[in-house]
Amino acid sequence: MGKNMLQKLNRLRGTIKDRVTRLNKAAESYESPATPEESEIILNQKLQNVLELKAQMKKLLAGYLDLPDSTNLEESLEVIYNMEEEIENLQVKFKILLTKYYKAPNADNVPMTVHKPKLKIPDLPLPEFTGKYEECESFKTQFMSIIGNNESLNDTQKCCYWKSSLKGDAKHIESNQDTFQSLLSALDARYQNKRSVIDTLIKNVLSVGKANDSPRN
Image 1 (cartoon, one colour):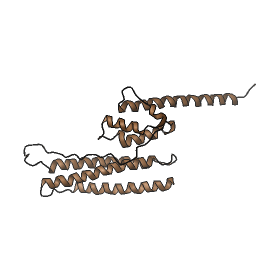
Image 2: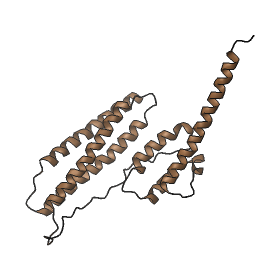
Image 3: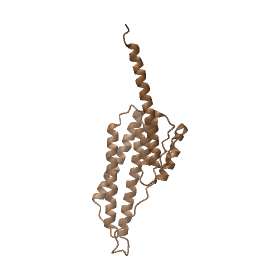
Image 4: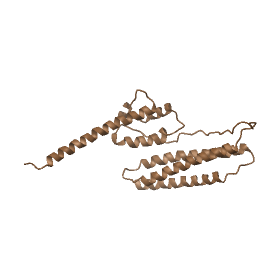
């Protein structure tokens, strides 16, 4: 099952990579049409395509992170991070083209205007966290990929998504400030403490085991 899912994700990654390549060629060979208004339409559509690729990349990353723990993801994740950087560069290229070829009507002496497309939240199920220690890092990575690093969301929106993702015992993870960053810090603090307790228990068990195994006179 895990192998089939990995192959499916790799095929999707290849499809996204092809679209990135085509958009790069479009940006590098772009020639302005007859009117600035036409440029605005074309370039804004290209920007929208780039934003859709960013959403697909977040979905792809979440898919890789859901694979079994035994799956070696090091190479796949490195490819994904490189692709994300390429897509960010693409977004910049099309924004620069907009400032170069589009100027608002009757604004000869006004700086170029860039119409920034609205970034949609990808249509993905939010990761859920029930408070299990072993799921903490995986949940945090997925949540940050979909919500935490999304620049179109403000702190209040991120807090709402965060609280919606916490289930069961995890709902008790709160902070006095109740900002997104403080909630994130509260999660880290709680599970750092739990990690310390577990490490201490393991050391104690090992110590007792060594004591019992030591030769007696």
